[in-house]
Image 1 (cartoon, helix red, strand yellow):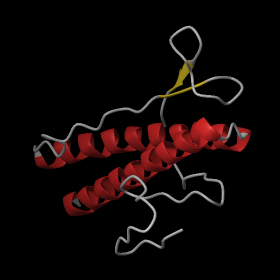
Image 2 (cartoon, one colour; image 1 turned 180 degrees about the vertical axis):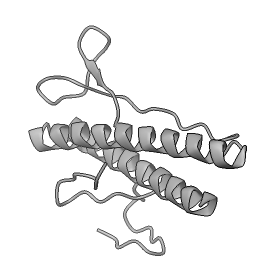
Image 3 (cartoon, rainbow, N blue to C red; image 1 turned 180 degrees about the horizontal axis):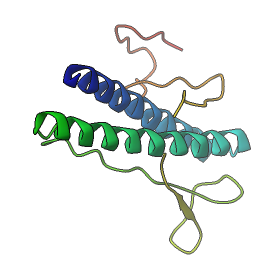
Length: 133
């Protein structure tokens, strides 16, 4: 049972990383193109991240109860906030923007954005497992 919980926790943490990566890419796109679809996708992804974080916390608590060990020792998962103006542009400060807080499912992305573990590579740089644009 404990190994199944650890696997699910790892899968959820991986999904969270992909969602956060997607939001990083969407934020970059939003800075140059105020498409409302980007803003909506960011909000939906943040909700999914928060839900997945809550599930991770519940599973880690169950794992602690079963095994007595702390599965998250040394692994802090920081929350992400993406300040966005109502019109879809990046927020300029505390008065001008609002933080969208985090929270299951798949990342909601426009067709031209794909989640990845690392920031985009400069053109011409090849990385194993990624197609160049």
